[in-house]
Each structure stands twice: as C-alpha cells, then as structure tokens.
Length: 220
Length: 220
DNA sequence: AAGTCATATGACCTGCAAGTCACATTATAG
DNA sequence: CTATAATGTGACTTGCAGGTCATATGACTT
Image: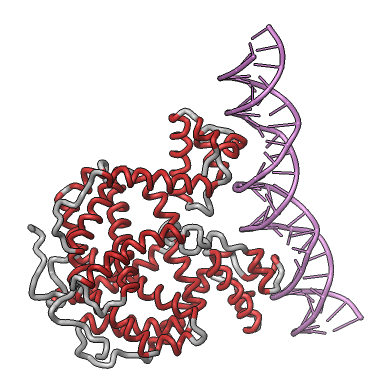
C-alpha cells in the first residue's frame, strides 16, 4: 500500500500519477511497466515515486483497491429489479451492471484486467486470492442453482465455475474492447444494440449454440 | 526464420536449443524470455545464437512453424469417423483430436499457447494472421452450420466465432493444465473420465448451462 | 531569525537485457 | 600440408530497468 506521503498529496497530483500508472499498466502490463516512464509521464522525480510507493506492484495494488472501493460504492445502491429472479436472470443483471461499471471506469478496468487476466495466471500467487474470492461467490451461486433445479446437476460444480468465469471474462473483454473504440462508451453500452448483444451472448451461455425449438428473439 | 547455419546443425544440437527455448518461453513468455538464459541452458555461446537466429522472436516463429508442420503431419491421416456428422459432432471430433495432438507435444503447445494467448493480444499484429487463419476456418464452419439449420440463425457469425474460439481455448487450456500434473498425460487424456469431461464441456457449449428436458448422460 | 521536519530531486549504483565483433577453432578443398 | 571458408566464442558495448541517497527546497513553529 502507498505510503502516507502519497496520501498527503493534493488530489490533483495524486490523480496525475495514478492516471500515468493506469496508462502504463494498460499498455505494458505489470511486469513490463517501467517506473521511469511512469515518473516521466506524471512529471515527478524518481525519488518522489519511491517516497510514495514501495515499487510498481505497490502502485498496482493501490489501483486494485481503488477499483474495489469504487465498485462497492457503485453497487451499494444498486439492487436487482426483482426478488424472484432465477440464477440466470440474476447473472444477467450482474453482468449488465458490471458493464455499466466498466464503462464508468474504462481505462482503470482495462489496465487491471490486462494485468489480472494476462499475467495473473503466471505471476506466482499474488493475485490468487483475488480470483479466489470471485470464484467462491460464483460457486455458491451455482450450487444454489443446481439445488433449485436450474442447472443440470450432472455438471461438475468446478467446471461450471470455470465456464461462467470464462463467459464473464469474454463478455467483459468484448464489450470493453469494442467500447473503447466508441466516442462515448457509456452511451454505447447502454444502447439497445449493445444490450441486445449482451442478451444474446448470455442467452447462448444459457441455452447453447445449437438451434432448439425455443428460440431467442432479439426483440424481447 | 532461422539462418542456414542453424539448419546445418546436427539434429541433437538443434533439439537441445529448441528444448531450452521452449522451457524459456513456457516460463517467461516471449517478451520476458532471455536469450542469455536460452544460451546458457542449451550450452552454446551468445555468438552462436545470433548465427542461428535473428533474435528470440525468430526462434519463436520457428517454434510456431515446427508446431504447424507437426500438426499437419498429425492430421494427415486422421479423418472424422463418419461422413454424416453435423457441425457439432465435427467440432467435437476436432477438439478431441486436438487434445490428442496437444498431449503428444505438451511442452511445445504450452509454450506457444502461453505466448499466443497471453501476449499475442497486445503484441502488435505479429500474430494477427495466425489467429486470423483459425478464425476464418471457424467462420466457414459456422456459416455452414447456420445454413444447415444447426445453429440459431439469429446469432451473429462473428460473435459465434468468438464464442467457439473462447470455448476451444478454455477446453484446451483446462486439459493442458490438468494434464501437465499427471505422470502420463497422453494416457490421462485418453482416459474415460477425461473424455467424459470434454464431452460434458462440449455438451454445455451446445445446449447451454440451463437444465432442459433432454439431458446429457455421462454414460453415452 | 533560527531551527525543524516533511517533501522533492536527479545523479548515481547495480543488474541484466540485446546485440556485436575480433579472434579461435574446425572442416573442406586443392 | 596449406589455404580458405564455415562455425564457434565470450568479452564488450549500449541501453534501460529498479532502486538509493546526499542534498535542496520550502513550510511551519517558536
């Protein structure tokens, strides 16, 4: 975590540094990020950097914590529209709310996902707990869904977790990548077309790629 | 591509170098791979390395080409068991044959996927064509499947490609990671249990996670 | 004004990467 | 056996990384 010195800084200066760090991580990941470049781009000296942070991983951890705080804040007064949703409806709500959040903090989310998904896998177990937490929540959800008879009970729970994680990441990545190309990402995410794309993707997760008797219609 | 000097080398020496490179890429990816370490671990001198290859990317490209050659060789006399398979059956056969291949060259596949999936996304467009080729084949397959009424025609083709790529990578990664923990990866991949896991995963891709009237039974 | 403390600085250290090159060794040919 | 071409070598250069530290600046106290 950052040292007190950093927290004492005027907000503007803090933001400049954080912003430069986000850019650096988004472009180079954690391992290849350069403190020298961060320092240059935020207009502070090398020495100052090390008076603020332990090292670049410390900066990243701070980023993570900020993102988490923002997420809690964001979800604080957001609740599923109804109490009687099934697991898939709930998941859909969650994904969509997640996309709303992502489009509110696109650069930060991009930087963090790049590191977590790209290097987190191979980067010791620094982030293991981070993934573990999300996985646990999903696991609970799936167990419940099986108990409620919504998910095929013959599906191994851990496999199901893997599948939902994969889907969640894929959708998130897709929306973020496409969204970053737009001029107004939030507007784009909220557009009917994008929402329908998300619906369709989740529909496929739910019912599969194969054409069946009950068909998805984009209009509903 | 490697220089003639490398190709003139006795096979054994070539293999030592390639093997060291695979280990290096598998552990560090392309960007963070060190020619110094490769050179140490293969017992050649720095100078020799640069008489064999342009740089480490050159080595990796060679690895890619070897893998592709081996794959062509491997699939040369492997054909789907029947002519009247639908798209999903064909995909299933393809995935399973792919897993067979992976378990024949686990380290090489691991190194290559790590680089392609981990860095390829952000690494300029050096590998763009590589992905493009696979995507094109998938796209054809899906278009055909839609034409045959096997896949929901309302599904956007590019989305479907993304989904099948994602599934394919997820399964491949899962099997490779689990497989590397086993003492005999090929035996493990061929085991009934593993095959059933693959079947289940593909079944879910096909019919979705939601419990429906027609249920998958592991025994068939 | 003098003293004290937090903050800022950039030259400087070490370490390791990529890549080069003059020279040594070995193979091949005449 | 000698001359020539091919291959092998590792010390060296350059570049940039992470990280340190003596010194400077400036704000606040008394």
